[in-house]
Length: 286
Image (cartoon, rainbow, N blue to C red):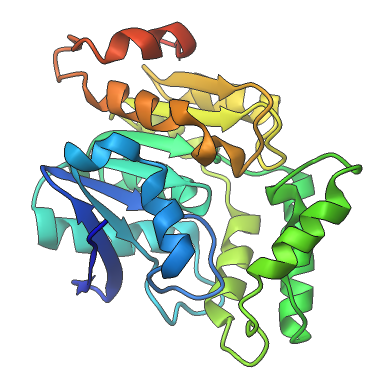
């Protein structure tokens, strides 16, 4: 898979792959706001499967050097600057986890820039359990200890699987999150723990698809239902037996994203949407 790196206006790093019209991706949490490398990059683009032959997928990192006290609204505003300068008009957006929170704010605050959008592994706020995990990451990062072990909730909510999750997450520590600057991650965690855009959901006008795992510890059933009720015309796909990270490994993800983006402005569908309609519930609220 050929990829290319660059920096968009406003200092937003990006990596792009594929062909066709733009599909803009806001990624999940990272200790540093930079483009993914190696296996992490392959996994990021692999989640989109054959969509790489239909779209040019631009994955936009958050702006490096974000200060403590920054908000998810700030992340969305940075993305808005980059999108407006680069693409001019509205684009299709996929926001994953942290990026999903930013996508909600972008759709609410900059409606002229969002044609349709998918929020995956996020909602209008996050659970207390996820806040505790993020606080654990913060504490360990500030102590210059390997921080990822605090985020077992990313992989599983089961106490039986937590030891294995800790081992897996230890291997994801950038051994040097000890010895490297993780201030971007600290600021991002703080912003996520303060995030709640429930009051802005009625302002969203772009069609939204919300994709969540049934076992996602970051978004409870009550939170996901409140998000769906708050956004007019939104749609919901819940993947059974999947957790926070597992939705990106599910073959349904690329299929459902492609089907949702295959709908045109008048609401007609191409053939690719038929299978997605079997698993995607509508909330066609006026």
